[in-house]
Image 1 (tube, helix red, strand yellow):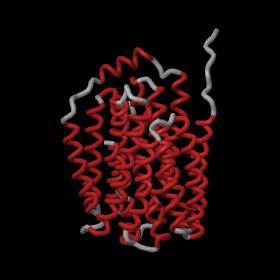
Image 2 (cartoon, rainbow, N blue to C red):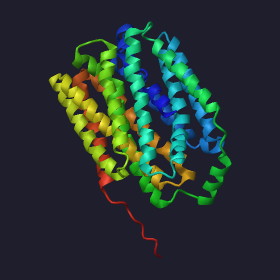
Image 3 (tube, rainbow, N blue to C red):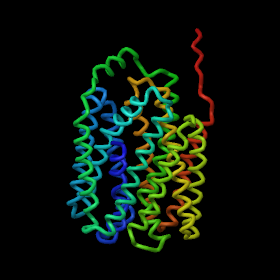
Image 4 (cartoon, rainbow, N blue to C red):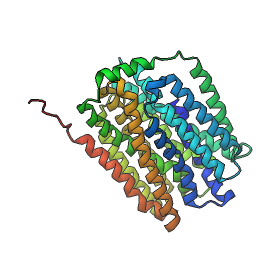
Length: 380
């Protein structure tokens, strides 16, 4: 399910340049298409973030996959910008319903393993989804018929397969989760600080994702000097490969150590992309893809590991939804602001101006993971 969710989130990335040329979209309109997804996702997380605790995680994941499939279907027939926006919104709704319970299920299934095990699995599944979106999606856009639509039909078919697999899972027991929440009361005070730190780490990862998935194809097209969607998708998919490799290699790192190194890598990645934009350097763009993959992997794993190790199971799905919500809000803000400055000043100049914001979120994640936890004095 997480891999499908990330495939859905990045499915439009190889198609953005074609939308712009065939439909005459501005950079703001193209990035608005991207931003609709995290906006819908954030709205669902804000309103229905804990729905899996009431209807069951299997039911929530089923609803999510149905919505993703519907979004892919709309994309597959979309003749204009209006239906593309509808398709993106449906995918955002689907991921909002299904991603948190899917992550919670993975964490629970690895409850007897070190927290790094579950976070590395979640992060690696993210890498698989992004790789499908950029590498396979780029190949389909370039070499398959109907470049505006065919890749979405493939995504629809995969969503149907995932739906059939979920139907084979036994129903879970939401009543047990609700009774544990009532027994536990509010989220413990010491866990709230962990939730804040995890949310910032995930937000820093998502801000990098917003940059690469919303503008990466256009930046790559400018720097690589080719309109071949497969070549551009291959460069961008380096990030996905690095995310997966780092997730597995760094699974023994603590959440804080992952967050610190991820914050450093985020700042370095944004600085590298600024250099790539100013020098029109493909080599530096590849360096950004590698550093961005390291940063995303470590930051996302840091957030998931922190929640897995410190949040009671009865609050885990809701806490994951909260962390994803914060990440989505940051993602929307980054995508729209980059689109505006790119349209106003030009693509590379606008990206150079907006990148310090992305690097700044990474720096905040670094600082929050360096600072010691606040310990409350419970003595009267």
